[in-house]
Amino acid sequence: MLAPVVAILSLWVLSTAGDSNLDPIKNYCKRLYHQSAVKSGKLYIDGGLEIFTPKNDYGTAEGGEILGYNEWLITLDMQYSWDWETSNFSMNALNITADPTTGTKPANLISGALYAGAPDDSKIYLYGGTTSFLNESFPGFEWPDSAQYALWSFDTDDQTWSQYDVSLNVPYKPAGGAYAEAADQGLAFYLNGWLDNGTSNAFENEYNFLKYLDGMVAVNTNTQQARNLSTSSLNNSPRVKGALAYIPGVSSKGILVAMGGVTKPTSDSSLDNEGTYVSFDSVDIFDIASMDGAWYNQPVSGDIPGPRTDFCVVTVSAPDNSSHNIYLYGGQGANNLYDDVYVLSLPSFRWIKMYQGESPRYGHTCHLVGNKQMLTVGGDASEDLMSGCDWEEYGVAILDMSSMVWGHIYHALDGEYQVPTKIYNVIGGDGQGNAHQMKPTGGFSNDQIAQFFNETASTGSGKSTTPSSSTSSKISGGAIAGAVVGSVIAAGLIAALILYLIRRQRKQQKNTNPPSSPPTTTETAEAPPDYKPARLDGAFFRNRGQAVELTSQQVSALTELGISNPAMLHEMDGRPRGPAELPDTRPADVFTTKSGKN
Ligand SMILES: *[C@@H]1O[C@H](CO)[C@@H](O)[C@H](O)[C@H]1NC(C)=O
Ligand SMILES: *[C@@H]1O[C@H](CO)[C@@H](O)[C@H](O)[C@H]1NC(C)=O
Ligand SMILES: *[C@@H]1O[C@H](CO)[C@@H](O)[C@H](O)[C@H]1NC(C)=O
Ligand SMILES: *[C@@H]1O[C@H](CO)[C@@H](O)[C@H](O)[C@H]1NC(C)=O
Ligand SMILES: *[C@@H]1O[C@H](CO)[C@@H](O)[C@H](O)[C@H]1NC(C)=O
Ligand SMILES: *[C@@H]1O[C@H](CO)[C@@H](O)[C@H](O)[C@H]1NC(C)=O
Ligand SMILES: *[C@@H]1O[C@H](CO)[C@@H](O)[C@H](O)[C@H]1NC(C)=O
Image (cartoon, rainbow, N blue to C red; front, side):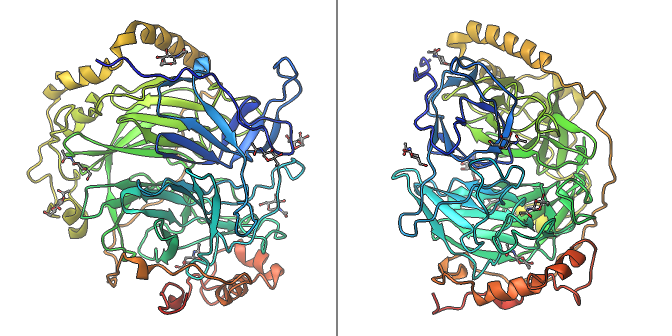
């Protein structure tokens, strides 16, 4: 076995720029609602709220915590193994620089998305997001930009930012939507989301403005074009603060699975969870091959997670692709925060509870790193932003998704993902896969979903058999191999792990309330209307516009929102209203590429 190759790098910071003296790494207390992506062996963290601990010249904390913003692009090297507890890693903060052709810097945003882009593309992409007004006196605070340039890229090779005008097809810049990307196809998705006074300078004087948006924005990261797909067939839409997972290898180009979050707010002041929770007792599926806007609802069974927002998901497939396992971690419920991990396994569509801890986390992001590790980034353990710092000193942690062990060490060379016993006890098979249950317990809800999995929709388990409990005692050699990866230093790791577990235990929150069950919505499985098939190629995405002024679409969009008459806006936003008062759908021509115009 190869000894792990490890860069012996202590923590160092390239730049401590910005107007404040607070360093995003040295003064880190906690972060949340940031954007992050992993690209070519590096983690990138953009924006987000950051709470800082001021320190004196000796590095000792001095004075109270300061609520502010992360004004840097933070990077963490993932090419080498690291251990955050010993600061044995390379975490840097890069200055955010202006687009050299326009002189404009990307805005400092929360609740947007950072996409890795296609493997052969050196750029990462920032889409959506909103300006937080939580501390307007923080030196890094900047007023919102125009929504015209909702898409930005950062070239990881030459370190330049570029902005793109996608406003002709997608007039608004949404925040709080669920996002996922089919990086292998250069496609990124942003589902629903909201508009508030931080999403555009046109709204910045609108106190308490909040509107949830229909539509799913699809970005072709290779051409930097975007379009807005109808979500009229998606139940409980528009929704925010939920999650979207990309599952490759299902249907011809993969599917997206949407879950959780909340729907329309009940009052106009609710960036809090005042809407209706989207129950995890069903999920919604989008077929990337058709790109026709059709969503299919599939009821799911098993250990249904409590309703929540602000959780993260990571997908990993069995070695033989017989199951695709979506790991859900943490989040925020109506009266409680979660420290748990659930897996939604496809195609059995069964939820399996994997882990329960006592150190909750919400507003974090997570990524698949190596073959089987979940990297978690940021998040908060309390609804009170000023109530203490993250016990994970740099805000990163690792979950081995095969052994379900949390740790502070990232293994750049990890073993193959093995399906955990807890999962194959339910769906059958072993660490390699060989899942028995190839259909939902109640059958596929319609032919379309069944076809994505090359199955039929007839109810019942069909060829699948519910595994007997006798499989539970079977532990595959592979699972053992997975568990002892890194055995060269196993003794040290075990000692470190014990310390870590003790520490994790110590960091228990006082919140001992059992998860409550706020009201949930009942989703009805509905055959989607007839959709026109569409193409995926470049012609499908509008070219970058040239206008610097508001486009006519933007102007009409603003008019539609009543921005010319703010009083009307306030009135309309707080209650359900009919289309006669405020049309929720944009005219069809907004989505259509007008060929020849550029
Ligand atoms: C970062 O930007 C600041 C100005 O905001 C500048 O003073 C500083 O030199 C820059 N640092 C680097 C490493 O470019
Ligand atoms: C907002 O920022 C200012 C300037 O850094 C700081 O003094 C103040 O404590 C911050 N407010 C909060 C609530 O942290
Ligand atoms: C850094 O962490 C890795 C993984 O635990 C370890 O192999 C390596 O020896 C560590 N390096 C230092 C300098 O502690
Ligand atoms: C996308 O289209 C929907 C109508 O389907 C519209 O309500 C929404 O504002 C659009 N989204 C964006 C981000 O412009
Ligand atoms: C934007 O709205 C929020 C409430 O949603 C409010 O706290 C904030 O002050 C508003 N910002 C401005 C500039 O009015
Ligand atoms: C599993 O699916 C992935 C993605 O579609 C594919 O690259 C891989 O070859 C598949 N593995 C097997 C064993 O079929
Ligand atoms: C279904 O069949 C098609 C065509 O044979 C194949 O490309 C696809 O990978 C199969 N999908 C699954 C989930 O087995």
